[in-house]
Amino acid sequence: MNIVITGASRGIGLEITKIALKAGHNVLALARHPEESELAHLQKEFKTLTFEEIDLNDPQAHLKVSGLVKYSCIDLLINNAGIYEQDDSIENFQKSYLINAIQPLFLTRALLTKLKNSSNPKAAYISSMMGSIADNTSGGSYSYRSSKTALNMLIKSLSVDEPWLTCLLLHPGWVKTRMGGENAPIMPEDSARGLFEVMINSSLEDTASFQDFLGSNLPW
Ligand SMILES: NC(=O)c1ccc[n+]([C@@H]2O[C@H](COP(=O)([O-])OP(=O)(O)OC[C@H]3O[C@@H](n4cnc5c(N)ncnc54)[C@H](OP(=O)(O)O)[C@@H]3O)[C@@H](O)[C@H]2O)c1
Image (cartoon, rainbow, N blue to C red):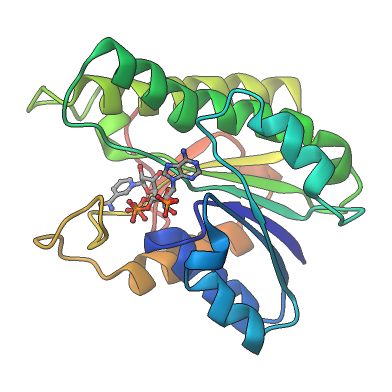
């Protein structure tokens, strides 16, 4: 498979990248500073890995990406990059919405032609249970929560408009990464393994589902 993934420099994205490479897939990893990340070391081991520099806080990023992808077909696009801002300032709201919700939609749109060239095209979006309205009993985290809720709605619409594309909204669990923090019970490699399995085992029937990394359906 040809796979394109965002936020591949660390955390869950890096672990998904490693799993995909070990399984023999071609991976184009997108990151802000790929040369300074573990991706640079990984590339010495895997000739199937390429990476490109992209900052999703740049509103033009999706336009740049379409020019950077050299694959004629994309089988799996993984929108993983995300931010959690503690301070719910207007500026952080804008940044969170752009990176967590708007760019995944525009990135997918920019790559639709290449996804269409695949016989089984899929787009996965790393969402969060914190975006679930039904599950919100603790409040707070306004910009993060609502940006993930927006992501879920945008991708639901996309799945209706592009019925040939398997769109998956996935919650990785509470994962020990820079975002998840030290107290998180799930290791990034375990979450990534589960997420990748859900992506591989999914079919068009699963489009617009909201599942966790173990494949359980979640409340919206
Ligand atoms: N960890 C959890 O418990 C948890 C729970 C639910 C959902 N999630 C979701 O899982 C996804 C991955 O999170 P994680 O836990 O692996 O967090 P992480 O370790 O903080 O990694 C975040 C990734 O996003 C990238 N990123 C941030 N801002 C970017 C930008 N402007 N342009 C391009 N890339 C950018 C980072 O790249 P840099 O290295 O360049 O900063 C990094 O690769 C996110 O969407 C997050 O919301 C995580």
